[in-house]
Every structure is written in structure tokens, then in C-alpha cells.
Amino acid sequence: MVTRNNPLNVVVVEDHDVLREVTMEALRVQGYHVYGVDCAEALGDLAVQPDLFIIDLNLPGEDGISLARRLRSSQPEVGIIMTTARNSIAARVEGYASGADIYLTKPCSLEELLAAVRSLARRLHESREAARTWWLHSDQQQLSGPAGVVPLTASEFALLAGLCRAPGRQLETWQMIELLGKRLEDYSKANLEVQLVRLRKKLVQAGCDSSALKAVRGQGYQLAVALAIQ
Image 1 (tube, rainbow, N blue to C red):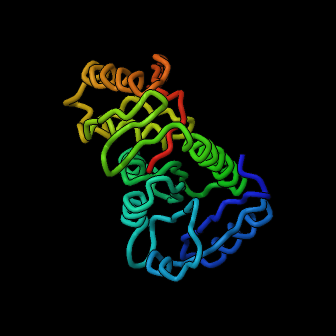
Image 2 (image 1 turned 90 degrees about the vertical axis):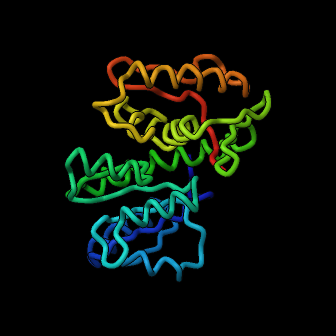
Image 3 (image 1 turned 135 degrees about the horizontal axis):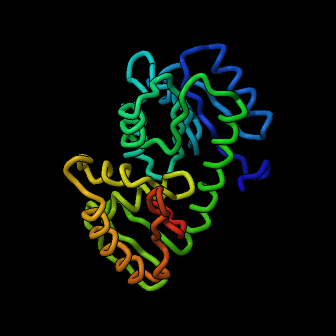
């Protein structure tokens, strides 16, 4: 867990002044280093390297979806929590596809938001610890582990990166199909399993246990090893 001796830099991107200040104060009480801005354009003035962003989607100027996509592209390991009143399945899918680790619908309590931050903080810490052993290389689309470096296809990389960022490193079947850029009506679970069989073999080649990628009955799939994304 990230402790007060090693606090996260958390940035709250929220244009509602009172909500932003209340959120920031709650995070400060928990020991985080907290910074707040009212729009995406103001992020350029920050003098710190953020570990985690809490992003409202309805922002003036560049909206939260565009911002999350840009951040995920430039900072693959950063944590992203989206907060929004958009609660449809389509909106959630778009949020996760744009790079969200956690998607919270408003109104959400401070307790729920702080729990989400703690959960994501644990995963960020695990990712940093895993950096000594396991790497997912964005530029080369490679997986490296104790047994060596293994090349990945674009689809394999997308699935692994999505699992790394997901809560509990677990995704539902529909989320994985979305990561592959497919439509649910055109791509079956059997098609997905073919992809996963190949991916499991590559995980083993890199030094993983054969159970590193497992099915979770009635839910989807889970990655049992923490990978750091570079």
C-alpha cells in the first residue's frame, strides 16, 4: 500500500469549485499530495509528476474523455478515476476504452471515492514493485519477464494492458471484446478464448505460471501477475 511516507501525487480535474475543494481536502486528510485544476488546459502549469488523476468528464474546453485518452497515451502507468453523471452502459464502455481504471457515477460519496483511490493506489504500488521483474513495453509491444522478452501482437498488448489497469486486474468478457475493437454481436466468447490461449502461451514463455491468466466463472478473466507498463 502507498503510505504517508510514500504518498501519491493526486490531481483533481473538476470545474465545480466547491466539489473540487471538498475532494482535495478529503484526500489531503488521507495523506496524499493533492493538486486541483478546473480544466485540462491548466494541467500544463503543474510542477509535479502526477501518479493519479480524478477527472470529471464535463469539463470546459477539452472534455474528460479526450483528456483521459491523451494521458493514457503519454503516461501508460498513471492512475485514472473518472467521475461523471453519465451512467449508461455505452458511456461506461467509452470511459474504460478511453483509459479509465475506475469509473464512478455521480453523485458518489466521498467514502466511495476514497475507497477507489486506495484500491488504485495498491495497484500502482504493485506495478512499481513488479517493475523489477515484469514489464509490458508500449513502444515495442513486448512482454519481458524472468525467462526473457516475448513479442506481442497489437491485440495481445491491448488485452494485457487492459487487464493491468482494471480493478483487481479483472475484466468482464464484453470489456475484453471492446478492447479488441470488436462489436459484441460480431465477436463471440469462443473467438476471445482463442486469443487468450495464445496470450497464455506467451505469458508462460516470459516466465509466468500457466494459471497467470484465468477465467472467472460468470464474470470474465483475471490476470494473476502484476505487470508494469512502460
